[in-house]
Each structure stands twice: as C-alpha cells, then as structure tokens.
Image (cartoon, rainbow, N blue to C red; front, side, top):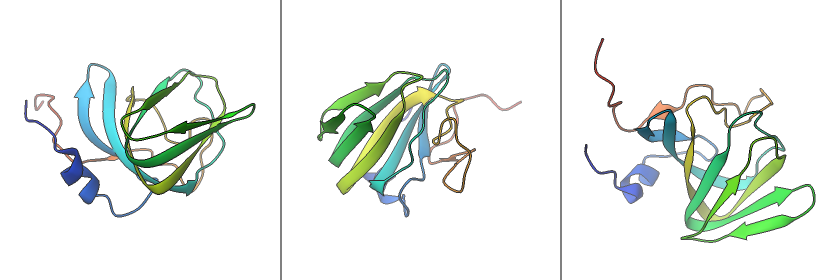
Amino acid sequence: MDKVNLAQAFARITAPWQPKVVGDINDMQVKVVKLAGEFVWHHHEIEDELFLVARGRLRMQFRDREVAVLPGEFLIVPHGVEHCPVGEDGCEVVLLEPRTTLNTGNLVNERTVASPERLVPSREPAQ
C-alpha cells in the first residue's frame, strides 16, 4: 500500500506509446504513458478506457469529432468507439483500464504492447 509519485513514474518512461503499469484495482490496471504525435485508429471490443491528462495536451480524434483534454481533465472512451489519440506538448497520461486491454485495441502491429512493464511490484501474493 505504497503511494505512487507520478512525476517519478513518468521520469522512468523513455519512449512514447509504451504504457507502464503503476497499480492494480480489482481487474483494472493503472498505467502511465507518454504520448507524442498521432497513434493509430483503433477500438476496444469490450474495454472502456479512462485517459487522465497529467501534463501536455491530448487531442482525442473520433470519426465525427475531436476532443481536447488538458491537464487535470479526463475522458472516458467507451468500448466499441473508434478513436485515435494525439499527444501534444509533452503529453503525459494516466490510464485506467481493464488488465486485458491492449493499447492498440482491435489491431496488432508494431505499436502493440502485449505485456506492459510494471514500474511498481504487483500486490498479488507470491504463489
């Protein structure tokens, strides 16, 4: 039950679009990620995602509109909704999503991170 310092967690991220796990809540994971430029258009079949901007600006593109998310604001993308995140101005984001969530959703490509690195140990007891 240790606290997580977000500034320290973000400092450990060396490349954009590489989410890192910093906590677990039931079947959910808390992740941190740096976003730079445009990602890929994708959707998640069953997982909703929460994007909380800690720094910079997130521009979430949807097929019919665009939403700007600034520091201290968050956006929930419901499952099944096609979206494309765009990180601007040194964007740092906290994600809350089911542990089954692939960062590229319904796509598997060179940007897919199937098993994100953990920056803090799991709280699960050793087997």
